[in-house]
Image (cartoon, rainbow, N blue to C red; front, side, top):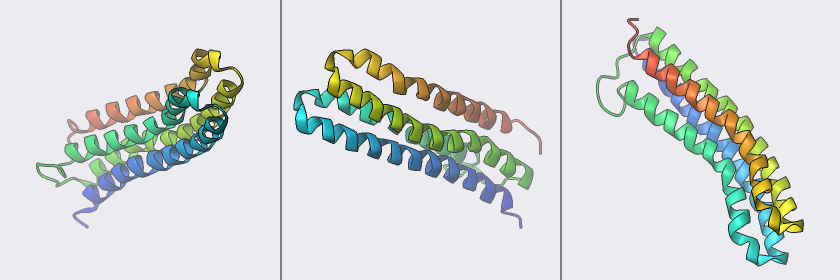
Length: 160
């Protein structure tokens, strides 16, 4: 019973990394399939389609970052890992935004990247426009990352 705080905080860190990572794996996989199809016909587009394929991978990085920040705040990566249940639940809640939004936005960004790769297949000169489409989805992952960072940062000073 005394370790419930640290258990919930670690669960939040794991949720952030796993969910955002799963979304990134799905998004990168879908866009990779589209990229491979385009490259069979036009191998000179490799660098452009690679960039579009990699975009959905950023959410996994954001989730991993939040997991590391959370674990360092709660003492798992050094320090005293004794947390009250209330603080553990707060850390869990602070990790939810990037986990949930990371999962959904990475999958959505993968779909947008697939469409952009299709655009490049027909109009290789339109890379700038093709890039903007999946980057717009990134905005929401960055907002979720910001919320998770701010929430985790604010918990440390609370007296609970």
